[in-house]
Picture 1 (cartoon, rainbow, N blue to C red):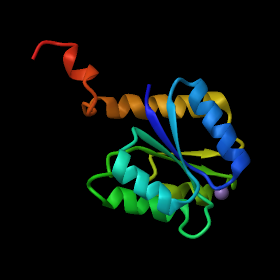
Picture 2: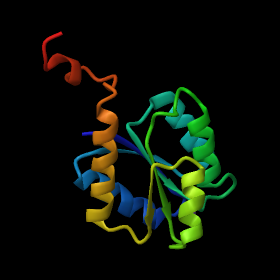
Picture 3: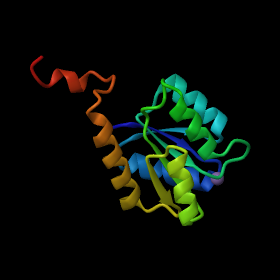
Length: 138
Ligand code: MN
């Protein structure tokens, strides 16, 4: 189980994403704009971030650049969520530092797989939970 920060301004999309994250066995945290998302990322250090690209004010890519340039949040994987399935958007999200990219509408299997892959990749870095270090000999 992971704590997943969802940054999404659209209420219907937020509701769906919360449902998908919860069904996958994870704990959702919600922010409806980039500024709140950045604040929560820094204070609560989620295991992964689902970042809507189109947000009011600061957009999701600018927010991701800030997260990736800040040592306290740089290691948190970010999955960009965009309504525009354009090649250019995918390149932009990679340049901004996003670890993965998913075009909306979200599909459970695709989202679940992307989350699992990124969590597995970062799991090697021994997260600040107690479980990982207690399993093997020192
Ligand atoms: Mn949006």
